[in-house]
Length: 260
Image 1 (cartoon, one colour):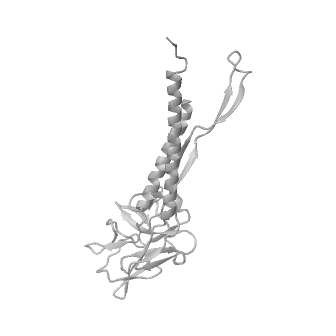
Image 2 (image 1 turned 120 degrees about the vertical axis):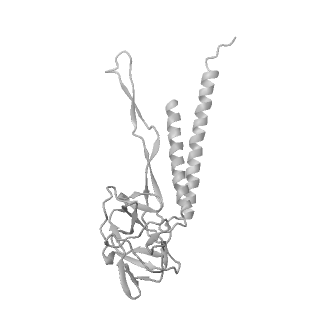
Image 3 (image 1 turned 30 degrees about the horizontal axis):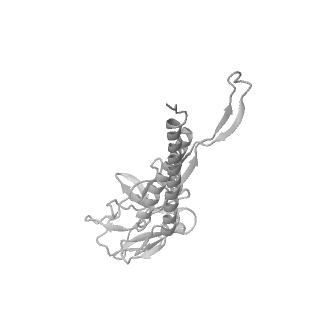
């Protein structure tokens, strides 16, 4: 009976973690470039039960069957599907579109380390550096910061930054064929496992749209449906625990009671 309690409790814990993940997805519906998380729920390894005769446990073991010991959320992985492009008419807003093969990212400097993002809602700081909304510098193809004199600049489809008729830099657009291997951090940033730099993308692999941002790829209707399903599963496991609790209460307080 106690094993059933543990199994139901593991189900509640897994659904609680899934609800947290879905809540975070819904909170970032309006975050540019946000990639929704998906959870992988797995079952614990099954156990094979045997009935053992105490008089001769070696030869009289009889197989009863297997039993599952619960579930857990193994990991959460971002879903790298292209989001819709939304026009903002701001020169500092840039959106990436993947054309063929791989997923492209803007290169960002964060505390001296190379990070990557799909959030192209940029700004220009007091020193004229193109940065993210959080103040992290955007890097060019050589890993250098991009310096501008004002927000009157243009960016071509292949990522070349031009101002006053002169080429200032080319955006450091990195690409990977396996984006799921990236480690997700806060503020929409990603990094490689060993902080190795991703290769710079070829022009044919991406397109930059100035005056646009890439919207979040979260589907609000699906996220809400998944959240309700998680709530129902949580409640079902909760009722199982309540049923076990009542059974144990009866076993302890009523069965085998000696009538005075």
